[in-house]
Figure 1 (cartoon, rainbow, N blue to C red):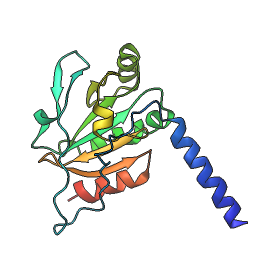
Figure 2: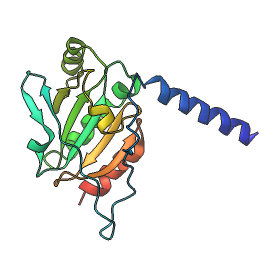
Figure 3: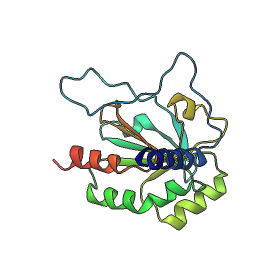
Length: 180
């Protein structure tokens, strides 16, 4: 009975993750998605986050490298993704909880620009935002396979953690890193 229940739970979770995934380009064969364990001082150097420049909500170019010197959370999302929107209240809570210790850069994906701007306004998202046009290679550059995907980049521009989906593990990680 437990095996049957586990099978249905895993099936439901897989369906939920796939339902929030829209036409994401697969990674090129010579590139892998970066998945890191809990960082430790003895761990090898983390992968450098690919730099990019996209237009912010006001139409001005904003690059990841312009935020170097402060940890950044890259939040790949879209207002069409139910899990992305469901996670907004907790993201706001953590943004306030650790205000000044990191920046969030919301990266809108697979959406019309007008809908993105409307969603940012209606959801009252207080952090930085950029629009990722469909012709951009950013999703494949980062190996994005589902939404939301949150990538924690340290102050030196290295990827420290990747969390796919709306997972409590992400907030536990933020507490471990930023509550010090």
